[in-house]
Every structure is written in C-alpha cells, then in structure tokens.
Image 1 (cartoon, rainbow, N blue to C red):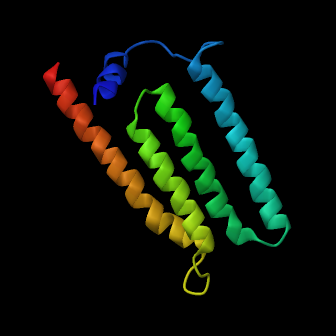
Image 2 (image 1 turned 90 degrees about the vertical axis):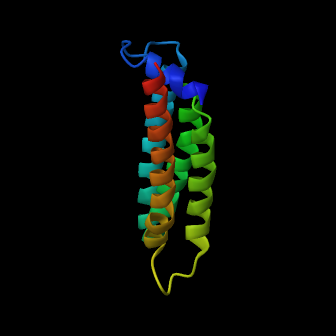
Image 3 (image 1 turned 45 degrees about the vertical axis):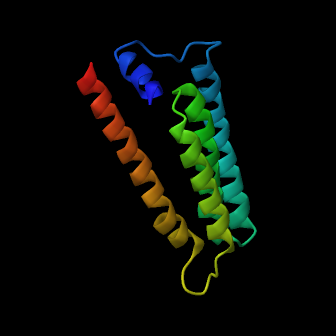
Length: 131
C-alpha cells in the first residue's frame, strides 16, 4: 500500500490539474465519459430500452476506475474497475422478470464501492498513524 502513502503525502499540495499532466488528461477523459454516458443513455431511452441505462453508466464508471488508478497511483482501483465493469455486464444479462437491471447494478455494485472504500480508509488511517 505504498501508493496510498504517496497520495496522503501530497494531500496538501495544489491541484494537479495543469495542462500536460496525467491528471489533466484524465479530467478530459472524465468529460468524455460524461458525454458518452449522456449520449448512450439518450440513445437507449430513445430506442425504447431505458433498462439499458444503468448498466451502461455503471460500465462507464467501472472503466473510469482504470484511469483513476493511474492518476492516484492506487492499484486497488484496478480491482474495483474490473469488478464494477463485470457487474455492469452481468446486470445487463440477468433476467428482467424479478428486477430491473438498475436494481442489480445497485445491489451488486454498492458492496464493491463500500469494500474498496473501507479498504482504502483502513490502509490510509494506518499510513497516517505511522507518519
């Protein structure tokens, strides 16, 4: 978990979002993701498949975690990216009779966010206590 130490040590630094930095590139990618999510959501609804919106957005969020892993130098975010993207795919294909895909996205995706967040919290707290 040395990468979490790096993030903590730089916590008080000014923004890394300067032209030409990795963070700036990811900032642009985030806007591309927002636009892609809006366009894909619009097209899904327009084509009569509004149930596709949640899995599409969750897949974009999952893919987004790969970029975050590089920016924050946090390899654990690769794990969350893989899990969230897989959950989006699984939720898309689960039967729609018992529940909508949005239900499955929330039910299966939320624990991943909570566990990864708790993991980062615990490692971060222990890293800060060591300093």
